[in-house]
Length: 246
Image (cartoon, rainbow, N blue to C red; front, side):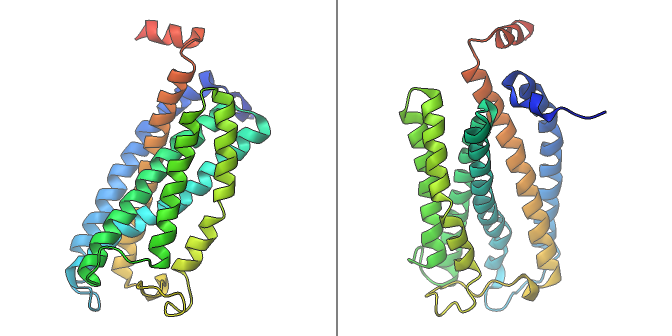
Protein backbone atom coordinates (compact mmCIF):
# COMPACT_ATOMS: atom_id res chain seq x y z
CA UNK A 1 0.00 0.00 0.00
CA UNK A 2 1.52 3.30 -1.11
CA UNK A 3 2.10 6.02 1.46
CA UNK A 4 0.76 9.46 0.62
CA UNK A 5 3.70 11.57 1.80
CA UNK A 6 2.01 14.78 0.66
CA UNK A 7 -0.49 14.52 3.49
CA UNK A 8 2.36 15.23 5.93
CA UNK A 9 2.79 18.66 4.38
CA UNK A 10 -0.15 19.70 6.54
CA UNK A 11 0.86 20.80 10.06
CA UNK A 12 -1.96 18.75 11.62
CA UNK A 13 -0.56 15.56 10.03
CA UNK A 14 3.13 16.30 10.51
CA UNK A 15 2.81 17.21 14.21
CA UNK A 16 1.98 13.68 15.46
CA UNK A 17 4.47 12.11 13.04
CA UNK A 18 7.25 14.29 14.43
CA UNK A 19 6.21 13.34 17.95
CA UNK A 20 6.62 9.64 17.13
CA UNK A 21 10.05 10.17 15.57
CA UNK A 22 11.53 12.21 18.44
CA UNK A 23 12.04 9.30 20.91
CA UNK A 24 13.68 7.17 18.20
CA UNK A 25 16.20 9.83 17.19
CA UNK A 26 16.79 10.81 20.83
CA UNK A 27 17.69 7.23 21.76
CA UNK A 28 20.04 6.94 18.79
CA UNK A 29 21.61 10.30 19.64
CA UNK A 30 22.36 9.28 23.22
CA UNK A 31 23.74 5.85 22.32
CA UNK A 32 25.88 6.99 19.38
CA UNK A 33 27.22 10.17 20.99
CA UNK A 34 28.17 8.50 24.27
CA UNK A 35 29.58 5.51 22.41
CA UNK A 36 31.63 7.69 20.05
CA UNK A 37 32.98 9.88 22.84
CA UNK A 38 33.84 6.87 24.99
CA UNK A 39 35.68 5.27 22.09
CA UNK A 40 37.43 8.52 21.26
CA UNK A 41 38.58 9.27 24.79
CA UNK A 42 39.47 5.79 26.01
CA UNK A 43 40.17 3.64 22.94
CA UNK A 44 42.43 5.97 20.95
CA UNK A 45 46.16 6.78 21.17
CA UNK A 46 47.31 9.04 23.98
CA UNK A 47 49.36 11.21 21.63
CA UNK A 48 48.65 12.29 18.07
CA UNK A 49 51.69 13.92 16.44
CA UNK A 50 52.43 17.10 18.41
CA UNK A 51 48.80 17.62 19.48
CA UNK A 52 49.09 15.56 22.71
CA UNK A 53 45.89 15.14 24.75
CA UNK A 54 44.08 18.24 23.59
CA UNK A 55 43.60 16.82 20.10
CA UNK A 56 40.64 14.85 21.51
CA UNK A 57 38.46 17.93 21.25
CA UNK A 58 38.37 16.90 17.58
CA UNK A 59 35.42 14.60 18.30
CA UNK A 60 33.20 17.55 19.20
CA UNK A 61 34.84 20.17 17.01
CA UNK A 62 34.78 18.27 13.72
CA UNK A 63 31.33 16.77 14.32
CA UNK A 64 29.76 20.17 15.04
CA UNK A 65 31.56 21.77 12.05
CA UNK A 66 30.24 19.09 9.70
CA UNK A 67 26.73 19.51 11.11
CA UNK A 68 26.95 23.30 10.70
CA UNK A 69 27.54 22.97 6.95
CA UNK A 70 25.15 20.07 6.43
CA UNK A 71 22.28 21.77 8.28
CA UNK A 72 22.64 24.89 6.19
CA UNK A 73 22.11 22.80 3.05
CA UNK A 74 19.13 21.11 4.73
CA UNK A 75 17.69 24.50 5.73
CA UNK A 76 17.96 25.76 2.16
CA UNK A 77 16.37 22.57 0.84
CA UNK A 78 13.35 23.03 3.09
CA UNK A 79 13.14 26.72 2.17
CA UNK A 80 13.21 25.87 -1.56
CA UNK A 81 10.48 23.27 -1.07
CA UNK A 82 8.44 25.95 0.65
CA UNK A 83 8.92 28.36 -2.24
CA UNK A 84 8.06 25.73 -4.87
CA UNK A 85 5.10 24.00 -3.22
CA UNK A 86 4.05 26.77 -0.81
CA UNK A 87 3.94 24.27 2.06
CA UNK A 88 3.86 25.74 5.54
CA UNK A 89 5.61 22.79 7.15
CA UNK A 90 8.60 23.27 4.83
CA UNK A 91 9.09 26.83 6.04
CA UNK A 92 8.67 25.70 9.65
CA UNK A 93 11.28 22.99 9.20
CA UNK A 94 13.67 25.53 7.68
CA UNK A 95 13.18 27.82 10.66
CA UNK A 96 13.72 24.98 13.15
CA UNK A 97 16.83 23.85 11.30
CA UNK A 98 18.30 27.35 11.32
CA UNK A 99 18.38 27.49 15.12
CA UNK A 100 20.10 24.12 15.45
CA UNK A 101 22.52 24.94 12.64
CA UNK A 102 23.46 28.19 14.32
CA UNK A 103 24.12 26.38 17.60
CA UNK A 104 26.32 23.81 15.86
CA UNK A 105 28.26 26.59 14.13
CA UNK A 106 28.80 28.37 17.44
CA UNK A 107 30.00 25.14 19.06
CA UNK A 108 32.48 24.54 16.24
CA UNK A 109 33.86 28.07 16.62
CA UNK A 110 34.03 27.82 20.40
CA UNK A 111 35.82 24.45 20.44
CA UNK A 112 38.06 25.61 17.60
CA UNK A 113 39.11 28.64 19.64
CA UNK A 114 40.14 26.45 22.58
CA UNK A 115 41.98 24.11 20.26
CA UNK A 116 43.74 27.04 18.58
CA UNK A 117 44.81 28.59 21.87
CA UNK A 118 46.38 25.32 23.02
CA UNK A 119 47.84 24.27 19.68
CA UNK A 120 48.84 27.58 18.04
CA UNK A 121 48.86 30.00 20.98
CA UNK A 122 45.98 32.13 19.67
CA UNK A 123 42.23 32.16 20.27
CA UNK A 124 41.49 33.57 16.85
CA UNK A 125 43.20 34.13 13.56
CA UNK A 126 41.64 35.20 10.28
CA UNK A 127 42.26 31.71 8.99
CA UNK A 128 40.03 30.88 5.96
CA UNK A 129 38.26 28.09 7.83
CA UNK A 130 37.58 30.27 10.86
CA UNK A 131 36.47 33.23 8.79
CA UNK A 132 34.10 31.28 6.54
CA UNK A 133 32.65 29.48 9.56
CA UNK A 134 32.04 32.84 11.23
CA UNK A 135 30.27 34.06 8.08
CA UNK A 136 28.12 30.93 8.21
CA UNK A 137 27.10 31.81 11.78
CA UNK A 138 26.14 35.33 10.64
CA UNK A 139 24.02 33.81 7.85
CA UNK A 140 22.12 31.68 10.34
CA UNK A 141 21.61 34.71 12.59
CA UNK A 142 20.59 36.85 9.61
CA UNK A 143 18.04 34.26 8.51
CA UNK A 144 16.43 34.18 11.95
CA UNK A 145 16.62 37.95 12.38
CA UNK A 146 14.96 38.61 9.02
CA UNK A 147 12.24 36.08 9.75
CA UNK A 148 11.44 37.63 13.12
CA UNK A 149 11.53 41.21 11.82
CA UNK A 150 8.58 40.76 9.44
CA UNK A 151 5.20 40.34 11.12
CA UNK A 152 3.49 38.71 8.15
CA UNK A 153 4.49 35.05 8.44
CA UNK A 154 4.20 34.29 4.74
CA UNK A 155 6.30 37.27 3.73
CA UNK A 156 8.93 36.53 6.35
CA UNK A 157 9.15 32.90 5.25
CA UNK A 158 9.66 33.84 1.61
CA UNK A 159 12.15 36.62 2.35
CA UNK A 160 14.26 34.48 4.66
CA UNK A 161 14.16 31.62 2.13
CA UNK A 162 15.64 33.88 -0.54
CA UNK A 163 18.35 35.03 1.88
CA UNK A 164 19.19 31.42 2.70
CA UNK A 165 19.50 30.56 -0.99
CA UNK A 166 21.88 33.47 -1.58
CA UNK A 167 23.99 32.45 1.41
CA UNK A 168 24.32 28.90 0.10
CA UNK A 169 27.34 30.08 -1.88
CA UNK A 170 29.41 30.06 1.33
CA UNK A 171 29.15 26.27 1.76
CA UNK A 172 31.45 25.28 -1.15
CA UNK A 173 33.87 28.00 -0.02
CA UNK A 174 34.00 26.42 3.46
CA UNK A 175 34.45 22.99 1.89
CA UNK A 176 37.36 24.22 -0.21
CA UNK A 177 38.99 25.90 2.77
CA UNK A 178 38.81 22.58 4.64
CA UNK A 179 40.03 20.50 1.70
CA UNK A 180 42.54 22.96 0.29
CA UNK A 181 45.27 20.84 -1.34
CA UNK A 182 47.98 23.12 0.00
CA UNK A 183 47.27 24.81 3.38
CA UNK A 184 50.20 27.18 2.82
CA UNK A 185 48.59 28.55 -0.34
CA UNK A 186 45.32 29.00 1.56
CA UNK A 187 47.13 30.85 4.37
CA UNK A 188 45.66 28.36 6.83
CA UNK A 189 46.84 27.47 10.30
CA UNK A 190 44.94 24.20 9.97
CA UNK A 191 46.73 21.15 8.75
CA UNK A 192 45.63 19.52 5.51
CA UNK A 193 42.35 17.65 5.96
CA UNK A 194 42.47 13.98 5.02
CA UNK A 195 40.42 11.19 6.58
CA UNK A 196 42.68 8.63 4.93
CA UNK A 197 45.58 9.70 7.13
CA UNK A 198 43.60 9.56 10.40
CA UNK A 199 44.39 6.61 12.68
CA UNK A 200 41.59 4.02 12.45
CA UNK A 201 40.53 4.18 16.12
CA UNK A 202 40.36 7.98 15.97
CA UNK A 203 38.35 7.82 12.76
CA UNK A 204 35.86 5.37 14.29
CA UNK A 205 35.31 7.63 17.29
CA UNK A 206 34.94 10.69 15.07
CA UNK A 207 32.42 9.11 12.70
CA UNK A 208 30.31 7.52 15.45
CA UNK A 209 30.20 10.83 17.35
CA UNK A 210 29.21 12.60 14.14
CA UNK A 211 26.32 10.15 13.66
CA UNK A 212 25.29 10.87 17.24
CA UNK A 213 25.33 14.62 16.56
CA UNK A 214 23.29 13.96 13.44
CA UNK A 215 20.63 12.10 15.41
CA UNK A 216 20.68 14.85 18.03
CA UNK A 217 20.04 17.45 15.35
CA UNK A 218 17.08 15.44 14.04
CA UNK A 219 15.73 15.24 17.58
CA UNK A 220 15.89 18.91 18.49
CA UNK A 221 14.72 20.05 15.04
CA UNK A 222 11.60 17.90 15.30
CA UNK A 223 10.97 19.07 18.86
CA UNK A 224 11.41 22.68 17.79
CA UNK A 225 9.19 22.37 14.72
CA UNK A 226 6.41 20.95 16.90
CA UNK A 227 6.59 24.10 19.02
CA UNK A 228 6.56 26.27 15.91
CA UNK A 229 3.50 24.41 14.59
CA UNK A 230 1.62 24.93 17.85
CA UNK A 231 2.49 28.63 17.86
CA UNK A 232 1.54 29.27 14.24
CA UNK A 233 -1.54 27.03 14.28
CA UNK A 234 -2.83 28.18 17.67
CA UNK A 235 -5.99 29.58 16.05
CA UNK A 236 -7.00 26.28 14.44
CA UNK A 237 -9.56 23.81 15.73
CA UNK A 238 -7.18 20.83 15.78
CA UNK A 239 -4.79 22.62 18.14
CA UNK A 240 -7.73 23.55 20.35
CA UNK A 241 -8.78 19.89 20.50
CA UNK A 242 -5.20 18.89 21.28
CA UNK A 243 -5.08 21.33 24.19
CA UNK A 244 -8.37 19.97 25.51
CA UNK A 245 -7.01 16.44 25.43
CA UNK A 246 -3.96 17.50 27.42
